[in-house]
Image (cartoon, rainbow, N blue to C red; front, side, top):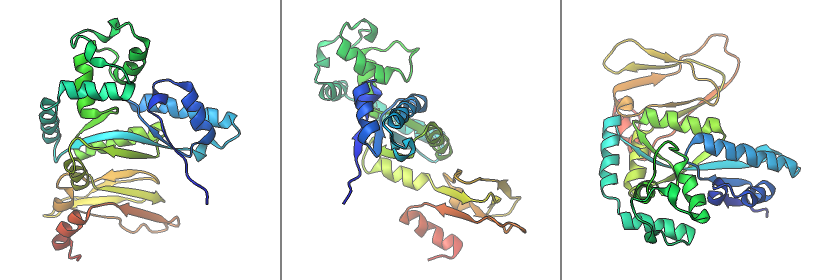
Length: 275
């Protein structure tokens, strides 16, 4: 039986080329840690180019991005949640994470020392992976410890469900095929995600997707094409009805895949008549 090979790409995002070469030659699935879609996209394109040089089909390699999502019914609610988490971060805990990942003692550095003045190549290489997310900022060791204290090694997406969907789409356009969702708290982070973010994936021919207020009013029309993702967040499922009307003369098939939790389905049953 063949085995699918998964490769952790943290050190490759830190520009370690031997790791990229290994993934290009052997990996079928790569877990990518990058601060932005643009940086992750650069890594993906480089790895695929290396795979082609190895005689492989570069499209055979799948990439999954590590992200941490903090969401709520509104952007304000999500930001408030993020601020509450941020206030509880332990500086010593953040340093312990950094030291554990790198094998270096980060506790010996001045918390308020600018990172650009730390004359250690190993530290600079590790720090580069995080600070590239905001290169204009003057980072200190304290900033870095607080950054990893909430986000770990990857990016933190904060916002309303629609904003989260837009952010995830940016990562998809950069080349990732899926996401490795991390948590700030468990199971709360996962509960928030499945309760707030309700994706509808469109496959096949382009057809109108309509939503209308349950208490009456005009419909709002969207025209999603194959591979497009519509996210109905907040109270959209409760306050709006949606549907795909028949299109005369439409020959191409179409499928809409609706993802929701069991709890969401139970809440929707009284409103739709479904059990």
